Image (cartoon, rainbow, N blue to C red):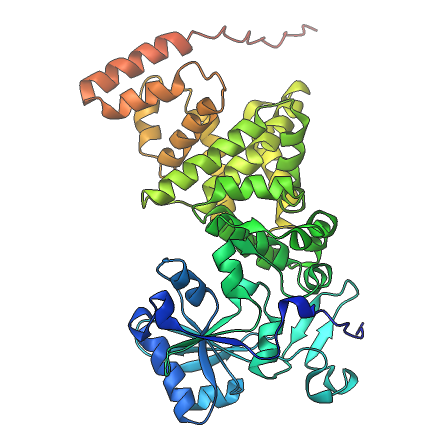
Length: 451
């Protein structure tokens, strides 16, 4: 159902005329920028359009951080942008953007967006371009406008800075330069309405707060806990992608703390949040340690995978469900498999974890049962398993979180460092300890019934 769009914008964070500053003041010049992004801007300007490098790249350069991506904003509409660049394509329905490929770098080009009162046009006549659902969330936003209006449509003041390489100036419509100087994350406009418009903005506030080490401005922070459940209106695939940005940014520990402090974590991973809060298991220690380890790996340029972090997030619930099933007489293998299916099924309706990650998650969990059984040739076979390393790291994680696994992590560490003769001796010794002969089943012979 279409709703009349309310005025989302607070004039305290907006100025009709931008503050225009010489970028040299901040040590920024065209050489600081992507050559391809500058080519895109200059091509658009040469064709008679306004064009700027915008957003995170400008923010990061002001903070002395090397940007990973460079985005361009322009008053040229998507079809007009596409006509200027041979290797380009229009993508998106909710927000139409143009991907331009000049060399190896992909430049994302967006058209200036309007607010709800642009050019005096009524909402009714533009309803096919701007739509909201019952909760106030924008489901389509392709109404185009001026650079001033585009600044109003952006989420955070620190992301609403426009750089013109032609005259080397920065254009600031929302006091973003001041907020960067004061290390503040501030929502543009009325935060309550902006979060309803797109609940993912809640996650962006938290992500940039963690990434930049800033503080959330009070009025920006106030509605977050109240509106966290609006994240249920976001599609599971999009929400999964957003969790990866949160969890695998290299600032996962700080992010987890912020998510929990603002009551957002339960809207993303409710099974983990519940067990972290009840204090009856080591879920809190395990999940916090998982984020610490992931951050360390990222800082060391080591490989990280969503499968491992999600395996850690859901493991406490998998273990709880598995224990319940075993108490009812089910085997450990069956109980773990059933528990894994249940925990994953509950989670994927919130964040759509792809099978390419749920399969290795299950393998990591399955190996938690197999790694203790290391006698004979089992240890050698387990070492050759494609998921051994992740499962071994998971054992170490469990021990770091305070779980007593009878020195299993140390045993496997030594085993990997040993030569073949030592490995065999270790396996033989492990077999003698854990491989005690089980009592043989009584094979009852059928009684012969004599006539």
